[in-house]
Length: 369
Image (cartoon, rainbow, N blue to C red; front, side, top):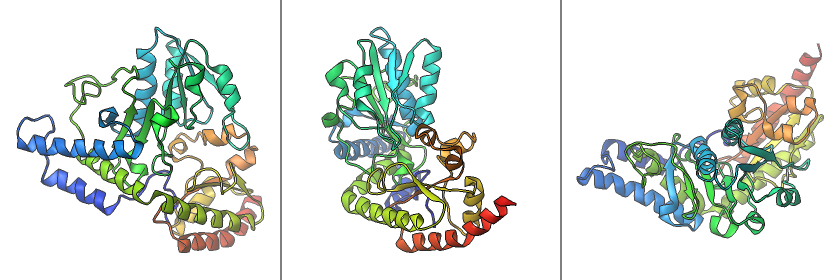
């Protein structure tokens, strides 16, 4: 049972087909003047068109990147550099992925002022604190959250949303929601790894970070990753085709999983109630068992989950989100993240629950020795 879809997803068949086609048949360089180049350029244009449709924005506002990390870095650093005359104040939350928090830490060393808005114990942003914190010199607000009160307080402040986990699970309309910069990664939506995009509102001031041959209107140099971009376009179109039905099914499965887990002893659900929050993610503490021990025990039975966030696990830093939720050390150390997708079945979850019922008493006995 693969239950680690927040870390990465299996590609759609249609994504695989277009990636292979653009590698073996239509393999031209989009910058080339001849027919092979034009063919390749058409794939890039088509992908921009499909993605723009899902967000109800213009095609020219979609810029392709190597993924979520680059998109977030570009949004944060590119905006800071382009708007430093107006101010050097940036607002964020303690919840952000390292792809946002690390560039902000770098900017702090360059003399920018970073303010973190707190969250409540369920992980909700304290919006009144956000409104109070926006100043005349606030150039950017960067959150995973979708909220449009920012421009009312200061119309010049840009709003960046890291939508790596949200895109493909919610309908996100930047123009309506007041979002100026939106970062997305392909491999979280059944697209290829190493491909993503950044939506940049045409009115937003942002500097390019990659300089060279002037591709993508001079905003991101480097030969376009045509197979990645083509695959990303197909994935974006496909994931939004039956969005409501797919997310409703995921939420139903997540709620079933949570209800069954709650029947077990010493099991605590972290974050919002299962019927709220993301439709596909469930973070659970199995008290008395360390996350990594349980992760590897499940792995032996072909069940794949993650401990906290996969991106932070190689640093052994744990999850920033769990830290922000002010959980006890015991709950943090025993937290496992289950993340579902549209391919997840009830049978996989039933099998996972069966294995957990079997291994937990054994692991707790072992831990107490």
